[in-house]
Amino acid sequence: MRFLIVSHVVHKRVGSSFFAYGPYVKEMNLWLKYVDEVVILAPKIEHVSPDPIDLSYQHQKITFVEVPEFNLLSWRSRFQTIFSLPSIFQKVFSEMAKADHIHLRCPGNMGLIGALAQILFPKKKKTAKYAGNWDPESPQPLTYKWQRKILASQFLTKNIQVLVYGKWGKPNKNLLDFFTASYSEQEKTPVTTRILQETLQLIFVGSLHPGKNPMISCHTVKSLAEKGIVSELHLYGEGSERRAIEEFIKSEKLQHQIILHGNVSSQELKDAYQRSHFLVFASETEGWPKAVAEAMFWGCLPLTTKVSCVPYMIGNGERGDLVKKDAQEIADKLHHYLQDRISYTQKSQLAMDWSRQFTLERFESEIKKLVVG
Image (cartoon, rainbow, N blue to C red; front, side, top):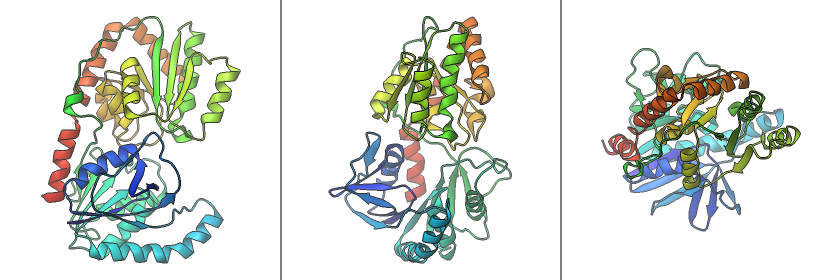
């Protein structure tokens, strides 16, 4: 089987190996177990070392078809995109014609092109992983809405299974409720019960960008301090907000309470979840937020905004809490748990029990059905 991946994810080549964002590659390697040949159609950069979070594809027969990375954020980039689109479409069409199975990674610029091009191949077997928020009522870029409409349309899109997070609207044979996973059955190790005493251990996991609102987690530490509650916040990830966070730490003299770790290995992150009492996650847009599911797997209770399928994940408050993008409200909620420690322990256990249903073995079993039938 010739398996084509159409993706916007930027890849790095090191020798004969291809690296990309670790959680994404970790998932794709499960898909690739059941195919003979892989074609990756995506942007690529050379002579750049992988980040600690990056992983390499594990397959013996990989062909990489490079396309330029593009966006529509400025007039200059739009002008450049106009000239590159014909070549990109030609490559996508050519590779789709040769593929036995077309796999689209959405939402993204390449996802939109792939969604349009696949209309011309109604008999080809196809899957699409929509890793964003499928909620039709949520504010999203117009290109994301186009991708959702094209993929969901049973008139335009044939012979496809679109993996989406959550249940939205009427049943649609194109759509398949799905999940994602980070840990295996073997990793279901016992977790030491964390008692809420002394220093509250908080964690933020994700890119340090405005859409993830890492600054809200930082302000939560300040709000707790004003209540006389000592806490530590450990942030894992990199991004444009790092400088602002560093300045905030310095100005508020919180060097010993807010620690930036950058991108780390999955093992380091796993250890961090197990040391933490709460995940503070005030993101504005998600699909299936791995940080929430991973924290729950280790009994780290999530305080998270109401976005995408998160209310379903935390049982509408049974195994976590929905909060607004407000540091004071989050601090008040944490203070509440200090007054009701039994509730924290119970919810933490329920969070762990729920998340541990979704293992890599179960995930791989569902993927195998999609690839080989």
